[in-house]
Length: 407
Ligand SMILES: [Fe+2]
Image (cartoon, rainbow, N blue to C red; front, side, top):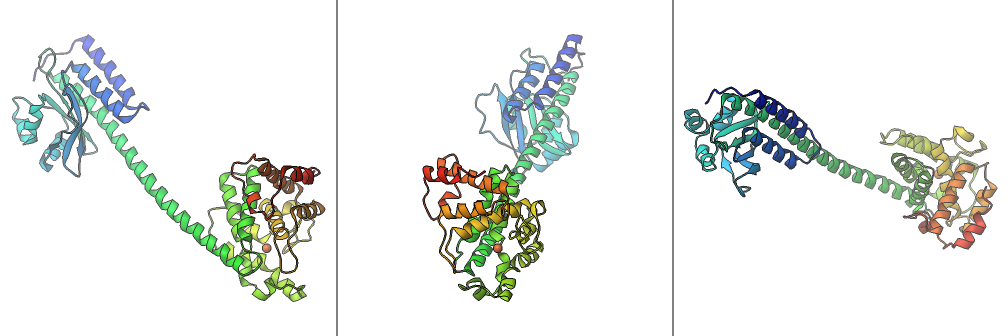
């Protein structure tokens, strides 16, 4: 090893290179580009004729090139390393001279011959937190001069920079892998969650011979209104789920009461009207990822004028989600057949909503609801969700005529 002192110009040049290397490894460029330009900076600092950066694969105990210059195509090259070689390099964590050096023979074992075939003169390990990540190798200088002590020190510093870059990149890959894994698990969980909720909705609707699909339609109407009102995706999801579950309390009500075609007695009416509270009690025990589902369920039969049930809430005391659901629920009840009457036409249903404007239904919610319907009919909504669920086909002229006086 030569002990020639570096000139001032060389020191300044190398300090600049180190600063550039620091910038390079923290840049947002793609990792292969960072590694390649880091190798070029190393080679440029020593005017080395050839060089490579190898990555160590711990599972296979091999090294393979991730960047190289001057060798042609060596992408397929792999060099086997013994456990002892890895341990030695982690322990020493310093560049090693390859030619005429007994230490290299001892440290590298059979791997030395492979590296010699490439003409490697110096090999510097890339180590972070006692983990071997790879190596930088450089061949002889263009000038044929020997590598000096200073060169070894400089290479050691550069190797540390590059090692951290590889370490950070592998951390990022692990994070991405973990994220993808968690995402997959979350999606699976979400699917089974939805399956369960849909099964509940089907069980609720199955109790009522006339309301098949009611919960799904209410859910879709609520989500469409919430979207029109500018709710966040998360809030929309919450009210979609609430729509599926809003009548869950009916599970506890006698089937004969739900399906009775003649007027209900006072007691039967009281029993049927207890379903929002029963639903609230069931859903309060479930930890939902969305807020407000039990409250919306409890209040979906409240009216703006305070004549609803179970709490006789008025106006703003009724949660907005429940005001949306009250309209969706009533509108679906009007436009589908019931045990005691056939369904109303769309025009008749709109008239009934208008009559109860401000008394049963929140005027803002009514406006949003008909605004979505109008947009869906005019083709302004990419995926219509209300119109396809209605039992009659509507045209632009009819809809404009019916909805023109919605305030
Ligand atoms: Fe209900």
